[in-house]
Image 1 (spheres, rainbow, N blue to C red):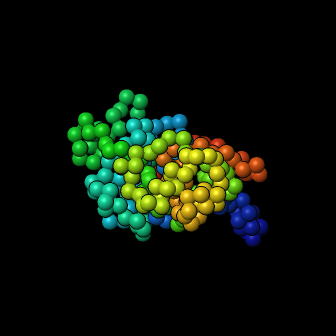
Image 2 (cartoon, one colour):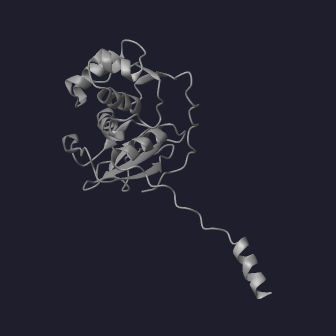
Image 3 (cartoon, helix red, strand yellow):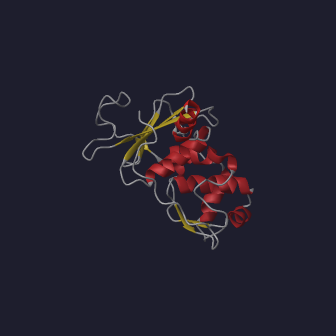
Length: 219
């Protein structure tokens, strides 16, 4: 009987919940987090902290960010990037209060596009961003401020070429006379910045619905 009771206990025991999978390393996980948060209905602050630096605080409602370091010190290949989120209450100035970096409450932050450009061009190791699909066609619908973006001549040419028509990555790379990896990095960044229109491939899987409005991790 004791053996039977022990067997029953073993069968009925609930296994412990498995830990969530770790975020991809470097800027890849950060880009995925920013893309997910911008699709949430609740406005959020995203915190990204690369190894050896203070956190970057991104206000997705105001499309601005704060960081104690200049963008010239942006690390291309950090070992890790810690990710956190925090909901912005309806009437709350996003960067006011002691919970954030030491700036006066009126400090509005810097324009977000240059930071997203840097993150987007360094994420995914030159491969396609996780939210894009093979065979999709892309076209630029709003010009970025070139004076604000640290880009190479090849990257600038990809941006300008992408404004001409909807194109798949291979065609865009050929038209811009760059390798496919360069074209893909630019498209990743422009998509993260919200500057692209996309025609999905005919056989593309349906896009996943927006994630629920809950933090990825609080700070």
